[in-house]
Length: 596
Image (spheres, rainbow, N blue to C red):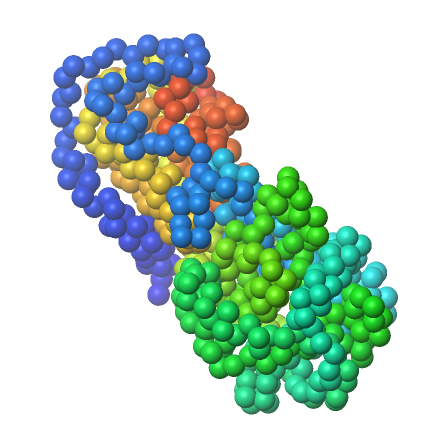
């Protein structure tokens, strides 16, 4: 396959699908010549933000009808759309440096958190590192380091990655922090006081890599379902959590809260696992020391998952549950985002612990898929591990964010290749969004005296159709984000840019400058207003690039939240000076190997 045909396919496929879904009905007005509009009203430059109060008075504005100035996001069965919103990544295990899976989860949470904040919601976005357990103790020893020093070093690499990716987490928690350990011990005591813990002994299969116990029936070719090696644990004393007592309660909860686990396929897996029968869970170890001591029995350290899962509450100040505390405000968590490999711990063990303690359960748990590279499973042995730092250095932060969040349906597995990334970034960002912005702002700069037009004419049917699509963009993207359909959010954005490119090609303002300057001014103003919506709503995904575009449009920094989209006084200011535009997205060269 030649490069040109690949690029054409990539250019057309995602945009065309999204376009067909909701804009094909608008094509007919675009394909006819613009009619002469009567009752044109002169527009005047206004000196303040209330400048455009009658700007679109040629009709009962579709922009006003479809735009929303309200605070919040669309409500769902699991979220009211207005209340405080805690979103969490899993805390990342510090046995090795960060990889693409960590970046993927963090980016997904960041897009959702930023969207919620820009919608006016009070957000608490939590990430961090899980630093206890046998695997950490062993890895530190192999590295010739004490466990705490090892954790300090590796945990910092995760914190650094979040900074490189422009992740906006509010808190970064470490399970070696004193306040977390105190919270975990308090949680243990609550479970013990409820009669949910007893002392017994355990022997069976255990995966050090997964920090998980497995039944004989779960093993696949002598390994854990994840592919990890397992070892037979000789009989040792252990405290147990009465997980079997909560089998029926969990199944009842899954039935009464069908949106608790997503996607549906993952929910079905969890339900099937629980229906197969739950055994009591060993929650302490005596064969290593690197963990939180069991209260009243220093011979035991806690099972790493009981320790780790409690972070979602300890970061909020638990056990302080007083009115006005962060725990009171943000718990139960609105959304836990996890990889599918750790869903069992979050959707079975964690809710069982909370039920036993009499605490509210999180509102939703979403499990995403895994990445492969060039169609192969990612592993050190194959030498195909994807380093997110390398991606950032090669392609930049926002293009990396865009590709990872748009390439696959969120929740499904995805395949990475440099070719796919180059084609998608060049098509959707450089060719479509970046080129559109460059065309608009260059035409304005060169033909409107380096300023937004001071006067525009009445709007045509084509203008109204494009503005209506832009005005509905917040609602459509909000519905996608509220259900964690991040890829659909991106599809809506790509489709909007596709519509705007179609509009500029049909209207041809470069021709109008010779025949009808008022119409040229109107077309350019409509495009600038559409780009305002696009750039504001792209901020959760590409915060830096979106704000560069907003700067070029002259949108004030305090008018970039979603509530400003539908406010008449916040539309593009007539007559405002603009600077000479600069390219926002670079174009990447296609590797020669793709030419074959």
